[in-house]
Amino acid sequence: MSNDQETGFRPVSRRDFLNVAAVGGGALIVAGMATRASAAPKKFSQQQAHYQPIPKSGQRCQTCALWQSPTSCQAVEGQVSPAGWCMLYQPKG
Image (cartoon, rainbow, N blue to C red; front, side, top):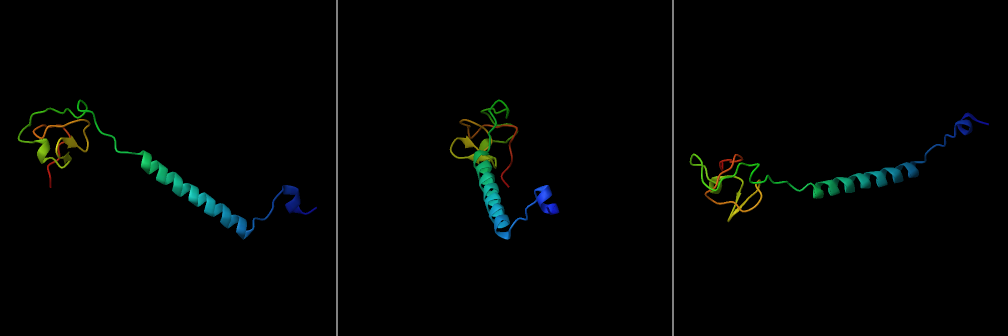
């Protein structure tokens, strides 16, 4: 018996290697796409963001970079007053 037969080693053909590489690569791509789709941006609750329906020091939701007209925010859940304020305030730049 040869040494290869004793250890159970069988050479891998180029075709087998390429098939495994293609399937593995495809699986990684699909897994990556599924992870991105399920990783929707999470919003803070109004309590977590210290939201208040009145402005603070001249800062208003309406002038924030996260503001989405008419009553929404990219970072805070629920309806938000245009005159409101929270600690996530970012001036539009």
